[in-house]
Image (cartoon, rainbow, N blue to C red):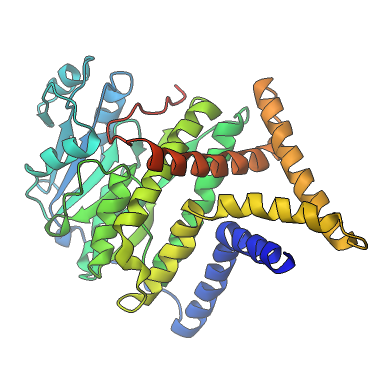
Length: 391
């Protein structure tokens, strides 16, 4: 029991903190051996042709701002196309977009889900690169330039931009927790990219070479992750570009964030089952190491290990002379009490920031459990009701 408990806690620690610490020191060592990283060339004359693809479903609240943001993006004249696809939208989103002749609008009344819309849009894309972004996120002006400059390197098959979550000083647990989570994720992606490759891209902002794009199965939940990882599976790198960022507001509340996390967790299990080749370390050993450390452990066993370690700790702490195990159990109980207190404070709309992290951590791991159960007990549709964002 002692060995299993310690091993369980080690895996949990490695999943959420240890991998990041290990990456940090590996990158430090790599920089010492390699020397300073050479700056990436930014010759506008050699940038590839590019299409910006935005899939929008009933986004009339955000769409005018998104259009204005898209039209203000910097890119060499004649090299950029903008495509908005609004399949299934029943509000005024298509009509608003139709008022902008600079944008190619694709619309059909049937709703088949985001990935079906993206596949349909790709039939109209004939540029060297394609950049995907969500309708409710806003890009910095040089985002496309910062992303597409990486394609001068033939080993690069995809580029992941940075996701930023906007929240203010009065943010609740959903906003502050999500913001902290993405700051940490951004650091991991930066180090992953410097080591070898980012492990999947987020749909808020990512890009692929048009020639490498592969349509994923129509029931795919995490389409952005799968599209990018299928390119990595071919031996191309996914690089991270923090100077290209998409900003969005946080989920409306923890319930909305939980809905989003459960869907992601179910999609994570689906992705793991469809990317079994990445468990073989021989073709791409570093990518396999990154994939298992950054994604697989988090999406599979760590929530179960949290439960197991707590139960075993109770059993060991009840034995005579078990002061060390009792202290460990006290630390576990204290952590979960802080998380529960965070839940109570959230319900009462009281903002105690020190409680946001344990509360959000528990919400994340509960979402993984619920997502696994959902995936194996129900049919997970690619057509889903999106989480509501703060206005």
